[in-house]
Figure 1 (cartoon, rainbow, N blue to C red):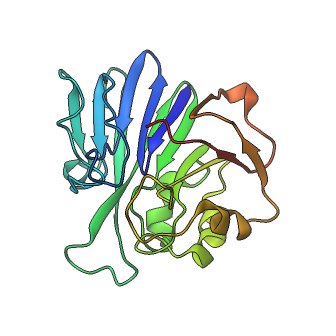
Figure 2 (cartoon, rainbow, N blue to C red):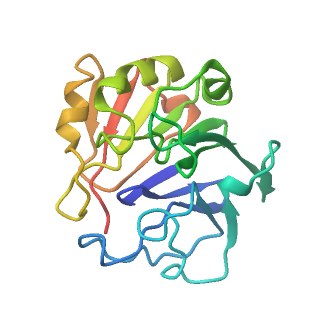
Length: 220
């Protein structure tokens, strides 16, 4: 499996011969990220936010679209990969209108959880489908997503082996969010691997024995 971070919450995951793009943003008005621009077999959006998470106009067609807010409980299968969602909220108040999702799937023997714009700790029911995920893509910039002080408890509850921070302040994003260094400061006992690029490869045999943060550069 190859995981590439475009910037903000947008990723390309390649597994089982399928190119999966998650949460594409709209460029350039998000502060400077270039368009995603790559082809995809399937585009998955965790919720509807055309500026930051669900812009489809800069990805060349054709591609299959999965809107996670509309997924049935059993999910949707595309070319052997089943995409499922946990309904959650962007804010701890869990107000109507703040609905977002966690997207999760299994490919090449790895369980991946994309936390999207999650804004709160999880109940046991919400946690159940992603507990023990191998790879977690987690918002790392604080509010309006999950508060940085809540991140250690969240990751302890999920218990992943690989953590990829996203959705944090960089020179390319115009949101009032925090830099990744503040996320890392909350997790002083975790190993940190700085890739020195925008992508990395992982398989079942190369999973680290203890939780490891993989820090990527944005590709766009």
